[in-house]
Amino acid sequence: MSKDEGSLRLEDQGRKLIVAIDGPAGAGKSTIARHLAQHFGLLNLETGAMYRAFALKALRAGLPLNQSAALEKLAAETTLRLEPGEENNCVLLDDEDVTGLIRSQMVTDGASKVSVFPAIRAWMVRMQQELGASGGVVMEGRDIGTVVFPHAEVKIFLDAAPEVRGMRRFDQIVPKTSVQPEEVIRDLRERDLRDRNRADSPLKPAPDSVLLDSTHMTLEETVAAAESIVAAKLHQPAYRS
Ligand code: DC
Image 1: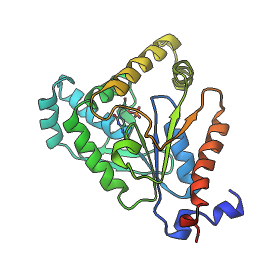
Image 2 (image 1 turned 90 degrees about the vertical axis):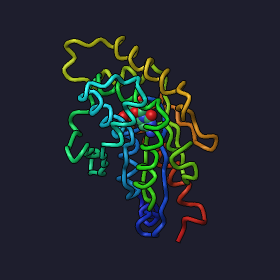
Image 3 (image 1 turned 180 degrees about the vertical axis):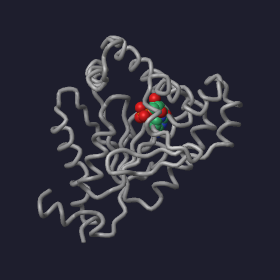
Image 4 (image 1 turned 30 degrees about the vertical axis):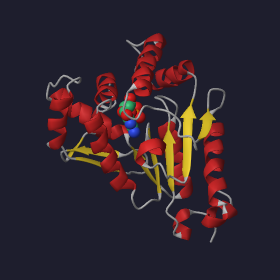
């Protein structure tokens, strides 16, 4: 970080910025959010982990993931906590740390399925608004700039072509014994379709978001572009001490 940028860190200024990062699966939101959080001294909150933890609970309970009333009842008996960490968020489901259990394909699909129901979304949105209420956060998900924090000071919509996102996901899978790139791309397209077409808070860019398409960008280039979007905001008079 340059000296000038360093002097613009939020904690130095007492400003409570909210950075919303939305976009489809595999666009690199978590990586970018983590970099921004470290660079600007913000808390990093991954809202997808909350949907994932709830899906895990529903799966464990053997609930069909298409029954809103049953899911709503389960939600009423559930406590979720998201704790920002150095690298990843820690997710506590009824006080159990499930951070390591929510990345399987089954939970991934489940999260996308439970997230279509308005009552589940309203519950999640309430918790997320409380988490970010004091500001000083990067929050990433699908509806942060549109629903959770429509007044966020910075909104980035991070996108990339489905084939590129699928291949990036495939590269992260270890071991690759039983999975083909085509399957990963197909699953991702299915999830995209559900996330973008649900009636309640579908994934879409907020009108005032900055679109960042990383299809032809390296990770370093995408991080640099995201940093300059936030830095441009911090350089505005309201954010200068
Ligand atoms: O970001 P992720 O892959 O961990 O999200 C998992 C699912 O949760 C995603 O398919 C849709 C849902 N989700 C959502 O609907 N709204 C959010 N703010 C975050 C995630």
